[in-house]
Length: 188
Image (cartoon, rainbow, N blue to C red; front, side, top):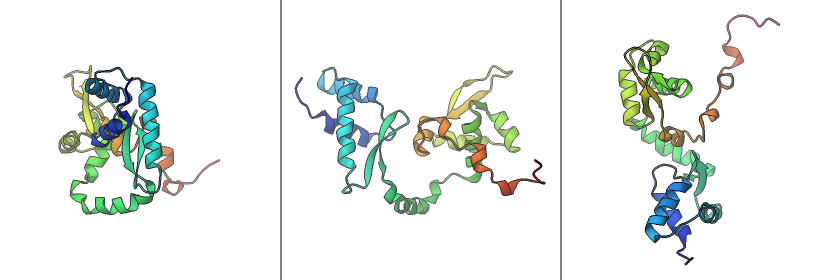
């Protein structure tokens, strides 16, 4: 098979993708461009070369495997600098209501809007709409209950946005709740 330097083509694919890109997507793109059959092994070897290239201190980014695909992310050493930029762009931040709604959906998915509102105790129309617009949640079908309400789940963009490979990486309640937050005395 002729050498097309697919490593650079894969690097360009990962760079241009606004979400993590999976091996199969890479193979489909390469097959279409070169009219050849590329294998997962070829892609994996090229990905390893790209990882090695960006592992050097000369680069502020690195290639990471995230959400069953590859994505360029800023190295940890530069997170604080990037965080400062994000603070200045706070207009795009999620409101407290949207964050609450997103957390409920993440932990209880698939879930209906009525169930979200029962947990929050307030109307969640606006929050659900904003999360759909930002593509952090998606419609996951309809419930079998009367009226067949829409079910909502987190999207792949949610996984990328929060740096998760799967939902099991979400913090568990026991990791969040502190001992000082309990009411009454501990009885042993």
